Image 1: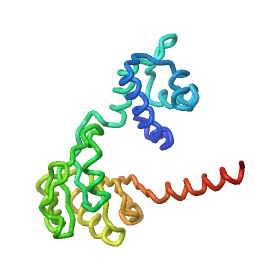
Image 2: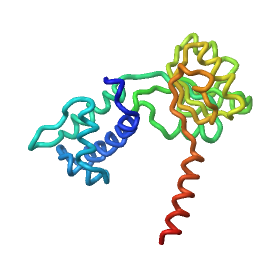
Image 3: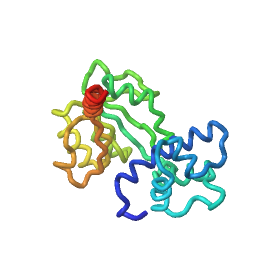
Length: 212
């Protein structure tokens, strides 16, 4: 894949994947770029430009085969392989993520859940027992997970990330608000700041009020 493809294009691919899945569930087998654009509140030219970054998928006069295009986008997003994932932090957020996200649908397999709170140890979430973070290093050496989900406070994240990177984990889905790449520039990170979305929504609400 071309490394020069912009992040904005990459970030739109999951949305295409999601809409194509909805189309399959509705029994729709083919769709034109114009029809897909109408559903997604986008433009046909935007969709064609995005998909052309990865090769031609549609046929002129036919459009896109929904199942094939979904499979192609899934392959681009590497959803057709399985990565082992560990989750650090079994509080409310970590518990919700482990319980309600089907990692297997997204090319991942949750293999371990860890927390430092002794009162949580031994409890089960999504079929996995919560283990102490004291055994995290040994677990990584034995099981070699590829990615970590961080649902821990910012103040404890730095030591955890250092331990993980020292044991070969270099990919993070980061809910901790800790700037991983500032200290570990070689890490691959997707930061999730839920409060940023809330503040953006707050601005949008006020801005809409002032313009009505």
